[in-house]
Image (tube, rainbow, N blue to C red; front, side, top):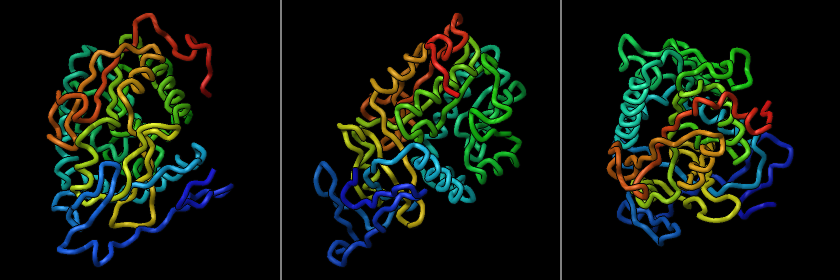
Amino acid sequence: MSQPGWTEPGMGNQIACPPPVPPSAKARHAGQLRVKDSEGCHTMPAHPRHGHVSYEYLPMPQVGDQMVVDMCTSYFDAEAPAYDDLDSSVERRRDYLGAIDGYVVRRLSALGQCRSVLSFGSGTGRREQRITTMMSDHGPTIVGVERSPNMAAISARRGIQTISSLEAAGSPEANSMDAVLCLYSFIHLPSPASRRGTLSKLVDALRPGGLLILDVFNLHDTSEWTSKLADGGRGNRPDLVGERRGDVLYRRTDRTANLSYMHYFTIGEISSLLEDTGLVITDLIGVGHGAEPGRIGVPLDKGCLLLACTKPQHQASVNASLGQTTG
């Protein structure tokens, strides 16, 4: 079913969307933009402040999972050459990712046995390399899962080997990984079915007693959307109810060609998803992102959600225990 402002893509491989609308002379009065979201009309700088990147947010049309996956792959292929610059130049992002990586190092170090780690959505491998380095001589071997060829090529140059998907040759055997990481990546899976299927495969790869860590954007983070507007962003926040709750397309405001997708989770949604695979949640932590970026332990309505889970010792295979196959 078509939505206003969208061209139904049919059998094609592209999502058609309206081009970015330049701000009018009135809207740019005194260097300000007026952007309306569900909380009203906000005044913000016409250009992002130093150390920030701004994005435009668009409603999610009714399209198939594969189309969204292909769109995200194209987006990250195009972003790959300069992707790591975001981590060093965008203060909020740098502080947030640094805090998450520090947490990961502490949890992996406490495992006792941590020789092999699977990182889903490993990107350029920069964070995986940093985590291994921070763990010094006893750092694990990290294998990445990365669909973008350009991202995977950069990762390989860093010494982080990747596979293109969990179905590809070289995928880890069941119960073989000491830990699984989903850092800044699980949010890009396009539907409840794809999240369930992917998570069950990741849990199957995890050994009993192993650790899974992931972080997700929080649909009810009260500071997230305000911070995006303050950085020069524009558009509408994700729907809080309905079939497309939490879904949003986005693109950088300084570029026009590439769209990507992400999903904002509620606490109940991500918790149920993890527990349904048999995992036991040991940590559910708020981490500042829109406000107080990088602060671990903010109230759960004031940041992103960071979760750590263990696979019970008696659980050998998620798919076997659920009577499902995910091939």
